Length: 148
Image (cartoon, rainbow, N blue to C red; front, side, top):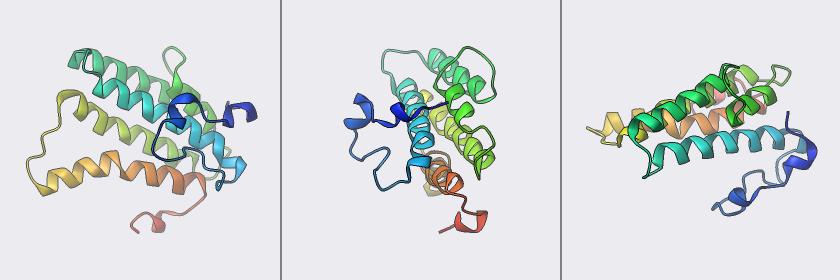
């Protein structure tokens, strides 16, 4: 579980182009946002690592999926799962959004080649859309808010 002291942004988060856990967010959501950020950041780093083979990247992403499922060795995905313990509104949807990101990162691991516009939109549905869905879910927004 993320503690209050962990709400502070870590070094990687401070180097991003946007504040990961903005002070505009209610403190009760910041721990979940930071846990999601750490998960997504690691998954992206694995998928984009130029020194890793595609097989090693896929193995690393599988370890994250195992963490989302509550299996394997402790990692940021398991920490995210524990943060989304089912007590918060939308925790199940938020966890599903985290899992959907892995679809895009697995594609990144093999190199992105979009065949056409529809393929690009499908990639975006797995890479960008889950971030918004995660934020909507932890704030208790219903599925009818997903399209906008």
